[in-house]
Length: 339
Image (cartoon, rainbow, N blue to C red; front, side, top):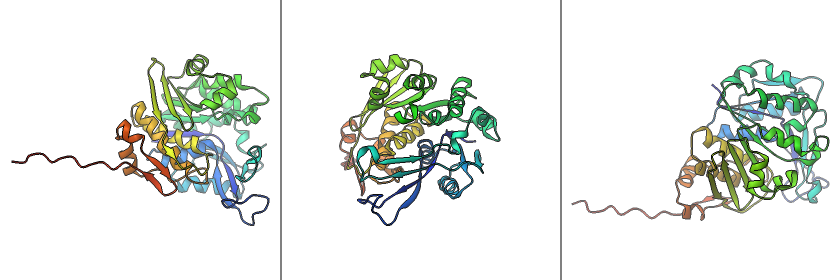
């Protein structure tokens, strides 16, 4: 049985070598990107049985996306190939000015043609009924009117007994036609909502936790990420849990939010409490912040176990850098009197 299904677009991604620009470099690296695909790969690498559902063009980029997910042990049996529409593409240019660092070529992509009928195609209906978690983001409904209708139906009909998680992933250029009010309406129908504090301010003009909770009163879990400061969970019963972020030598921030979602949701599926879930999210985000790509090698089981079981004081001393995680050295316990 598949525990988690991630529904959304994936694209081929090209990037120049570190320190170079798209305009002047002689070589480009090819990989893949896309919020829900990143989360699917993260969940799978954390031991969660995961499927990714979407549409790809019947082209070389689509082949690359599908193969990358399969190599990451993600089930792609619910992926359709479209012979007429192309796989989306985006380019990352870290050397460019902020407004030009991410260049998207996704208009009219194969994924943008997903609509409500896609939820009733092939194996997907049965998998949605039996999954424990269904994850999507605010990017997917913004791709087209058809995609909006699909996500609206998913959140309204609520197949099976799965938790539905929704990462706001605010992209203002994608929401020009509908506006953030529609995004908030969709998010409020989910069980778990993840949102950055900066996103909440930019999209919804809310500036504190209570304002955000008043805007989104329905989700059982509202996770508010505050970049380097930490993350907070507000539960429906009023319980508040806060965990500070780790110290990180940041290389590139893109993809860290998806990694956080994967870490948090993996622990949630396993039944971990909110402190463990938030810590798991921070660990995965930190791993991605230390690499130039959208996904970094996630922490080893040993690192994760040590970090999740650390005291509050020990947690604050953990640091992530390009050479891995630096954990506090624990003094051995005294053996005591054996006589």
